[in-house]
Image 1: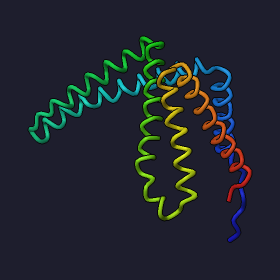
Image 2: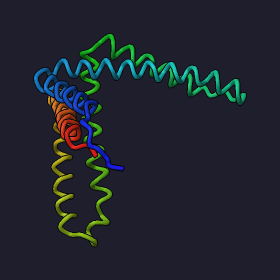
Image 3: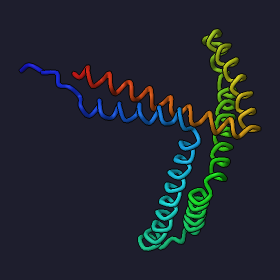
Amino acid sequence: MVNEKKFGWGELILGILFIIIAMFSFSNPEKTLKAFVVLFGIGAIIKGLFSLLSYSKLKELSGIHAGSLILVGILDVLLGLLLVTNLYSGIFVFAVMFAIWFLVDSIASLINIGYLRERHTPLFIFTLILNIICVFIGLSLLFNPISSALTLSFLVGFYFMMFGIEMVVLAFHRF
């Protein structure tokens, strides 16, 4: 039986869609951030409602009173409502969260690179320098949330662009 190559229409459409989203993200960083905040807010509301529903199911099935599920559910719903109804505060919170994530991830990498010192010295030095630079970038993003917000939009745009290009290439090279 001979395998025929077929054109990947799904990959092509998905790739073009992602490239369009990336171009929108690059050209409209503020609108992109607002969309992130709204989607994050909707996700928090859904997660909160799920936690509240899970409490009822957990209590019904096991008899356990997990008050933390109620607390987390209520906090998630409130956070989601805050983000959806107050976009500019949501953008600020999103930017600060991104900066903290960037900083914590860089510090964690610095803490965990000790194993490279003995095994691969050039990689250790490179990783050390890169993560020290990333700590300074994380600190600057933390103290300048607007830069953090704009960086987030461009990083997501870059991700969508790379993924879109990959999908278009796959559409023409199906196995």
